[in-house]
Amino acid sequence: MLEVAKLDAFYGQSHILRGIDFQVAAGESVALLGRNGAGKSTFLKALLNGGPQARGRISFLGQHLTREQLHQRARLGMALVPEDRRIFPKLTVEENIEIGGRAAPTGATPHSINDVVAMLPMCGPLLKRLGFQLSGGQQQMVAIARGIVSRPRLLMLDEPAEGLAPVIVDELADAINRLRQTEGLSLIVTEQNIDFARETTDRLYLLDVGEVVFSGSWPEFDARPDLVDRYLAL
Ligand SMILES: Nc1ncnc2c1ncn2[C@@H]1O[C@H](COP(=O)(O)OP(=O)(O)OP(=O)(O)O)[C@@H](O)[C@H]1O
Image 1 (cartoon, rainbow, N blue to C red):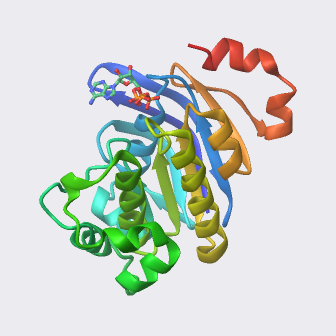
Image 2 (image 1 turned 120 degrees about the vertical axis):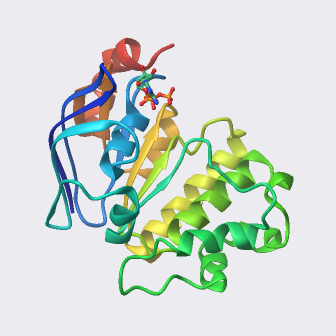
């Protein structure tokens, strides 16, 4: 459903991503691992045409993407849950989630709030709360709810486990795996948390200084402990 070939991305004169080849099949969940600054967020933003200048081929659901703006790519069925979550502090959780529905693909009706709560039950008791009243884990759940309300075909989660307590990270992994089953979503999960990525994805790419240095299955990754030492250890 997503095919990326020879993608380069730039911020001004800075050449951030180099020759990225990356695929996601329908219903597949794929991790993109890498240290701080490796280029994970830049990759997701380049897919959405949401910041960096990109060069290369991106094809989504059979359509070759060229100049489509961010909102147009959202309407094709791409959704990003950004690393900083961007919950509106003065809106209620319900309003925060509803805003995501505006990005529904052309012809699709967004999920109702009840549907979203059925998929992410931890959002239920929070609906009337204001954005600024949420914990980090609650913010992440609400950001995911806002991402899925539009019925995206590809959900991109940028470091969803970052800064969360281990028990919340487990809950988040369960929620993501339930969504995969019920919605048949394709997913890209960027992470530095290897265990969380392993729990929520089928296979992985490893990025270092803007280049893919490994791609394969989790057993293939586990057979190469040098990769963690070289590319993921702090
Ligand atoms: N808006 C920007 N303008 C210029 N350079 C940027 C911008 N955003 C990111 N960069 C640079 O691009 C490189 C990749 O950053 P990116 O945020 O994609 O990394 P990351 O792997 O997502 O890491 P992190 O977990 O720290 O967000 C870094 O060197 C960063 O300084």
